[in-house]
Image (cartoon, rainbow, N blue to C red; front, side):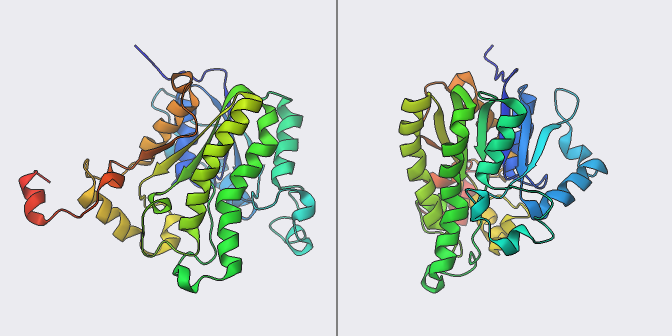
Length: 304
């Protein structure tokens, strides 16, 4: 029987700050497969996340099917919108939520990983990071600053992570990011430049797969996950409509479960996917293939 076995592997998942997220689900499934897991957490959420862990508030979410619980080898404060410490504005560095964390940039994260585990200390890197300050604005009303901020946080941050972490990953390592169908199709309400950022991200995955593959032997892939009602997604404002539409239209119906994304991530990180790179894999119960909304009569005929 083929099994996903990540025993002896170490993963770093950037963008984990709560249990109700794809990043957390991916971390959990990597642990189910035997990997040790480190996470990078946005500094303003760092203290709350650690406190919830310490108080046992996430114990149910951490329970593993194979027994035991998801534990984090390291929890790093991490803000992927800054490449280096010097890029962090002084007012941010000195703010209450940042001042005690030191260098939270991508370079700072890489330095901490190198100090903790040395060269070749990682096997898997996951980018579960996205943000757009004007996500609720249509593109026609999005400012240049809002648009570029969306690209910086949601797509270039992955480029920066591959740049700085690839040398710390053993040859044959796996890099993974998360996208959404709006990169390819119009999703009204998914604004602020986020659709452009996801399109850029998928393009970057293809080019990075070539460059990191030839230089380091790493694989670089992307999961285009379906609509999911996480707390972060609620900021979009129409997530309920998106999930309802997906349930109605998708060939497999029903709601997407975060662990379905997590299991795909574990597969892509495993030796079973050793020849897969530069790919965007849809994990959305088939929603992306649909070009029209079925009528009630058609759904009834199909048993939906």
